[in-house]
Image (cartoon, rainbow, N blue to C red; front, side, top):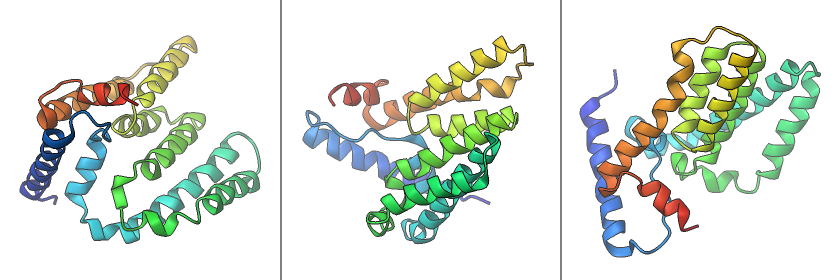
Length: 194
């Protein structure tokens, strides 16, 4: 069972860190607080990243292989594409290991690949769950959820309540932004500075 008090303490430490950064450097462009990263940091210790990052790379590899197969291709195309991506990032893999969840692309990309795999396999509920988790890292997942929902409606598929789960992510994001900075749209303001 997850120790909720530990998660609360981790969240409070995260809030304190952000308040210190905001107080000292509010005019500088900062990385936006990402809700999924906060949650994962509360569950797993930072030292677990040594084991978690290879699992994420493995998930990335498996998702690309399954996506190639779902597109009616051979597994080999997906394996070649996955190995190409991993080898291109091979120089930075040792750099990623100590940072764990702080580098969100290593979590976001496998989630989006798995979303595509589930969608092509017509496991729509799982695709929207992946989009919800990805939406806690990047706002473009919200747009992807809207596009997929419109596509399903156009194909006259039955729309289930779980398909609206990715649209809860912006609300969670705004609540965390408010808790961290006192501004409901803190992430949007920081992103606008880029």
